[in-house]
Length: 152
Image (cartoon, rainbow, N blue to C red; front, side):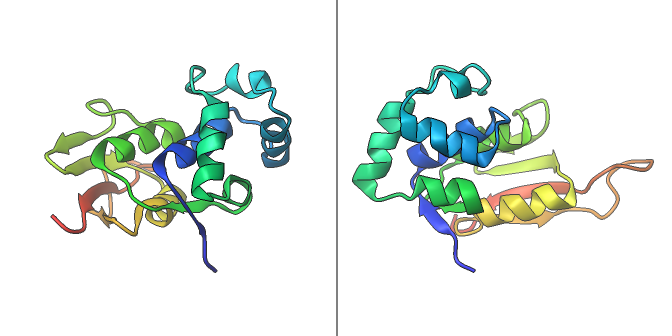
């Protein structure tokens, strides 16, 4: 199954809209209607200009609707984009939830489903590597993940 390829601005439109917690169809209907307030009041980045990002999607031919319904893959993603994605999708922040060393992110804890999702989203350009099988003591601990740019 192939996934929609999205540019960074359009992908973050999708991520921000999804961060509202609303259903996918509600998000699509709201974005189509052009009244973004129901999403922005709940979104992680309430200052994002949805209209501008939708215009970019149209200009670039990015199918944001399909991406919302069935996920997507980034066309390209730099290190700061990865960090922003981790914040939107997983609520992870640098220096709190992981450590950055040049173009590598380390000590990121994600559950197996989140790891699979991250691999889908960034796998064209980033390696997502599980560093250990048992992260810490006790039940409910997840593997530590390292993200490395594939072509350093």
